Length: 122
Length: 372
Image 1 (tube, one colour):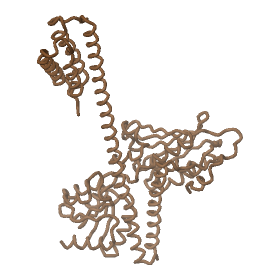
Image 2: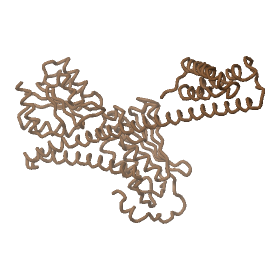
Image 3: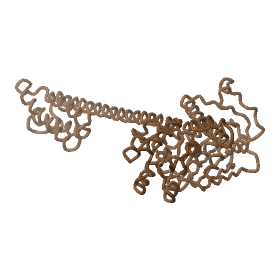
Image 4: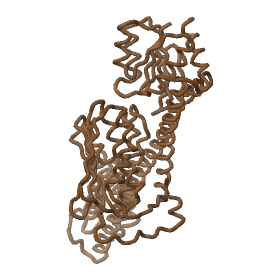
C-alpha cells in the first residue's frame, strides 16, 4: 500500500516514513502541497496523510485539491492544533471535507498504524 | 443608554416643553404669576437625560421663551428683559440649572462611552490571551510528535545504525525547538513582570553579533536563504549584556528568515552613525502591511495574523527584541514598503566611546537570575 505524507516539519516526515516503512508500507513524503500533488500525479497513492497548518499551501487546500482531482484517495488529517484556534477545531472540521480519519499530534505510533489499517480496510 | 439624536431628539425636546407648558397652565390658578419656570426645570432635566446635547439646548431656549411668553407678566409678549427683579432672577436661575443639567448629563454619557471602550479593550485582550494559549498548546505539541516517533524508532533499533542515529538527531533538533519556545515564554513572562535584568559589561558589538548570527544560521540555512553579514572594520564598544545582544540579533534574523521564502536574501549590516551603533536587518520576504507595522512589537499581536499561524512560532521574538533593546537604552524600528516588498528592522544602541568605565555593578541577585 502506498502512503503519501505532507508536513512542513522535515523530522516529522522522516520519522513517520521510517515507522511506516518498518510496517511495510511504501512511503513518499512532501514538505508542501505542490510537491505532494506532483508526486500523486506521477503515480497515485492509496492514502494521503497531511498536516493542517502549513505555509504556502494550507492543509485544507491540499485536501480540497486531492478530493477534486483524485476522489479515490483516502485522506487522514493530522495537527497539533491545541483544541481550538479562533473558536474552530480545525482538525475535527476536516471531517466535513471528506477526511476519513484524524490524528492529533503527538500521537502514539501504534495509533498511526491502527488508523492506517482501519482506513485501508474500510 | 444611547441618547436620542436627530429628528427624534428635537421632537422629544419640543414635546417636553409643550408638556411643561400644559402642566404649568394647569397649575396657573394656584401659582398665578409666581414660579413661571417651575415645570420647565423638570422638562429640561428629562430632555438632558434622554436626548443628546443639541436637542437639550433647544429645549432650554424654547422653555425660556415659552415661560416668558405664557407665564411672566405682562403675558403673551416676549420681553428679553422681563419686568421685575424676581423674574429676571428666575430666568437666570432657570438658565443656570438647565445648563448644569445638560453639562452633567453629557459628562455622564462621556464617562459611559469611555467605560464601554475600556470594556471592549479588555475583552479584546482577553480574547487574544485565550487564542495565545491555544497557539501555545499547538506549538508545544508540534515538536512532540516527531520526538514521540523518534522514540519509537530508538526502541526498535536500540539507537544503532544509521536509522538510530537519525532518530537521535531528530530528537535533538526538536528538543532544541521546544527549549526555544519555553525560553521565549519565560522571557515574556519576565518582561510582563518587569523582571529581566541585564548583565552589562564592555562588549565589542561585532563579536556579539556574530554569536547571534551563528545561533540563527541553522534556521536560515534550512530554507536555503542567502544570509550575508557586514560588520565595520573598526571595533564598536557598547556597555551591554553580550548574551542579550546576541539574543536580539538571533531573534531579528530568525524573524527575517521565517518570513522570507526559499531562496530569498537576508542581510545584516552593522554600522556607526554618530554616537549610535546601528544594526540593520533586511529581508526580501513577505513584508508587513502598513496597518500592522505599528503593532508587530506588541505582545500577542501576531495571533490574528494567519501568516504567523502557518509559519509556526509564538510571535514573541519581536516583543523580546523591543524590550531588550529598550533595556539597553536603544530603539528599534520596523519598515516595509508593504506586503510582498520585504521588511527592514533597524536597531540603534548607544556607543560607549572613551576609555571604558568599569562595568556597572548590577545587584548580585538580579545578575544571578540573568539568563544563560
